[in-house]
Image 1 (spheres, rainbow, N blue to C red):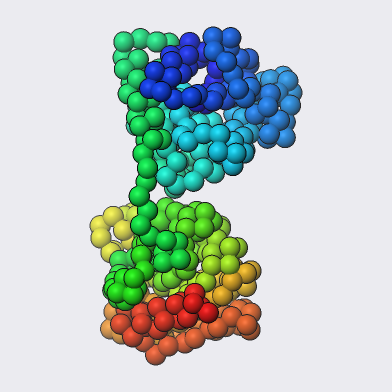
Image 2 (image 1 turned 60 degrees about the vertical axis):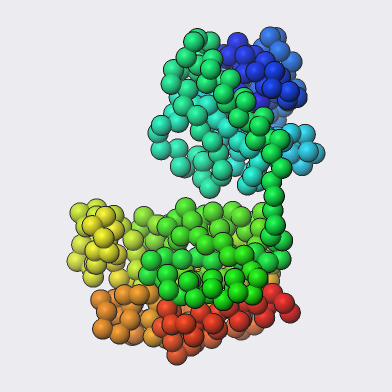
Length: 398
């Protein structure tokens, strides 16, 4: 149980009592900067949380900067949570609060693994907290009223949350798939046919395929799960998020995209799928500097911009430099007849000359010991999917 016990001791005492009533043992972590509580035992107090973030509690109190203080306590809580979990000290985590309490609670959950129950009762639960939640499986429960004092509205919410988190912690998850048979694959509407072909082949051979939509959050989720060791191999068919990161599109997965598998040495086949495009919202939302570029309305709320010569040169370098850092086996496959559904002969983004610039840039910057294979197929051709699958399985089973 994690929260600001300095100002909300009474309400956390009620949550603790509810958890005990459900049969749980409760380990308490105080992230309140201004003090603690004597209403119930505190196992990890604020000074220890602050110290875990490399700071001194008295100093951040005296600085009188609430935002900075919450950042420190969030980082400290995340580190404390990870250390306690490594010792198998808890099976679930629950916290609650307003803006500050929600921030620290969600921050503390960022390094906890998928499947570990995580509940946050929050005044902000109905807002967009995607930046704080990231790709974690956090259950948000609206507090409806402020998390400040006990009343007839918040008490049943706390009771339900405590019952939920205890029940979740007792559930024995059945996992029939072993990690050595689990493969991640990235997809977009424009590469869907390729991914369908790959999935069918892999499943016919007994592999479990986990598909991630390359819309930013999907790429982040794939990277996060790769870092948790969830996959035996990665078929990164759709690396379009690199283009959005470069050009400020809405589907960026951040600066660390295309790095996790390499860091862990997971075999990966990488394809420049949909690097012919950058994603924006409605046509009106396209930044002014791109208004005169080649734009295509995929649906009314999605506008695609064709990447140009300079961008493809940069993207080839970015992709290669990331893969050069990989500690495991890597192959890069380049479909010479097009990188997406709309980058095909006779279609709106078809531009072999620009694709050649991308190909040349990848080849120039990629380490010589990484296979770079140019194939005479379109990305959505079945033959391309077959080649991608065969190369990955060969690397995995070497």
